[in-house]
Length: 177
Image 1 (tube, rainbow, N blue to C red):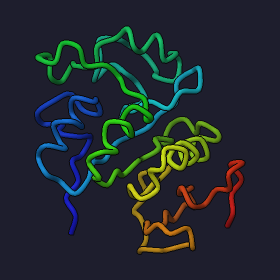
Image 2: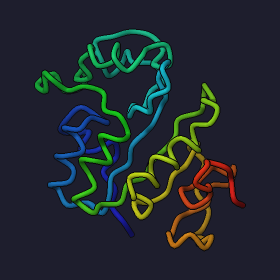
Image 3: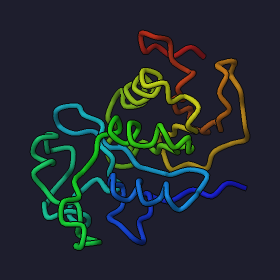
């Protein structure tokens, strides 16, 4: 069994922030779990909810904000002692976590908004940053099926809804099933 820090060390720092992931890494889990949404200008950011009301000092749908607009907000509502907590991009989390060697379970949040192409975008970034061995990449909250190896050299679990995993895409982003 593997232990994952859900949204980082979310009991001790603002969830899905760099502060939370850095603290989690010090606590010794096997990996971290995080959630990805897409901004109005197409950036992949790490945030669980489709709205920003619960975790930040802003209001409304995350998808209606640009990255620059989101960066002006404080994502510390659950832990106000972290005065400078901001919303990170998926790239920034990968950069922070790469040296730790921890697994990263990426959940692409598409329950309310589908964010066309988010699977390919996230899988491309995962490969570009050589993070394929970090763990599963799932589009939905569906229970994952048993382990599979599609010849890409990474072990992952397959989503029953057919979500993309880093090894499922060719360099141009096309599916290679």
